[in-house]
Amino acid sequence: MTAKIDPKRYLEYGGVAPARSLDGAGTLAYLQAKGFGQNNLEHSRLALERRAGEEFVFDPVTLNYCDFCAKPLMGGEFDRLQDGRERCITCSRTAVTTHEGFLSLYQEVRRNLEIMFEIQFNVGITVRMDNAKTIARLTRERFEPTPGFDARVLGFASENAGGYDLRIENGSPKLPSIQTMAHELTHIWQYRNWDRQQIQAKYGAGTHFFVYEGMASWVMVQYLYCTNEGDFAAREAALTRARTDEYGVGFRLFEERYPLRIAGKELRDTPFKRAFPL
Ligand SMILES: [Zn+2]
Ligand SMILES: [Zn+2]
Image (tube, rainbow, N blue to C red):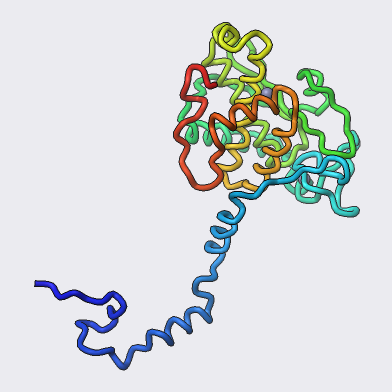
């Protein structure tokens, strides 16, 4: 036979009478005075919850933005690069400059993508750093530094004899490098797993670019959320959403079909799991 015990009286060891030597209220007050319930983890958890519904508002006209992370630039607190781009202090500090650093970052992104989306690349990929102008020449985007944010692709993936070449702009800070790697690796996955003719037949020639770019843009934003880079992810999502080309339109289609998981939720349905993602 078990007696019912009032959970509030668990300190009474058998429920006979409150133990006089134990001061429950005093202990709680003492712990609270020492910071109980106020630790960093709790604060960041609360901040994540608060931020979940917030929208990043991008104002391309009145402010100057860092060309790498799109944060507004304050006063003189930024570097102007030789090619005209402006880079905030944080981005300057995290710029990936060595080949080793670049390579280990790439391996991390590739591994994370495989785990997050349950995919395998199974192909030789040669990665290299290149300058912005070379990459701009290889992509269809023009590169012209402006006072605002230069929303543009900083990487390029192409087929070589035995696999793929992946070029990423040199001097890029860590987060934009990660983002571009995730975007370009998604293209490599698409080239390996999709039949281009089938995709064109399904979505229409020309329109299929929206599917390729929309998915790659969705993946780079979701990747950032999954790795707890929520601020940067929200900014990237807002910038991409604002575009009227295949990146922006495609991203909005994917976002509608696969709502972004903002914090701590596992990914179930992803575009990687379907023959036709939209
Ligand atoms: Zn920046
Ligand atoms: Zn792309």
